[in-house]
Image (tube, rainbow, N blue to C red; front, side):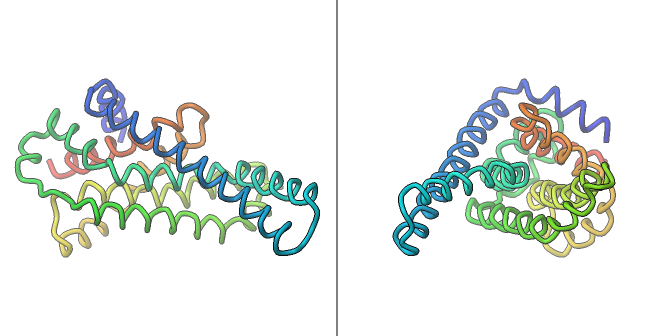
Length: 226
């Protein structure tokens, strides 16, 4: 795990990965802002046009909704970032494989963009759903002081480990092989996912965490096979 982490930090200087980093940041921020704008106008439409409340109340409701989105942004940003990284993840994996595992790159098969997009959307929806279900538990565990972050990292680490690992494995394994691989590596991938989940909760660092996670998953996959 530590080998994968430190190798991934070194990979951040790769020009190909830097280009992907710039694209993922730009697209993640755009999607996040579009969601915020959509929530703002949807709230005003509901409160003013449909319920007939006054302009001031509509603005207050829209502001409250936007602030609520920001408060829940620690989950929303993670979901958007991982969904976006699925679109460009193949480029990160290829860059890491070209640099460290050229023999694996030669035998890899391309994952169609449509499949990557579908898997990214599934990942984002699964993340939102599970965290919404766990939200009441997060609140209850606040009294413990440490229960909420521990549960958050455990749950999201499991999700991230599965998503990032699958991103790499899909290039090298058949569907049947992936099922066996998923069973054999579930705990190792969970460890990696917890690290990435922790990085996603740190301001500024969370911007690079999805790219770092994709590189870590690549090193973990090929390091394990070696």
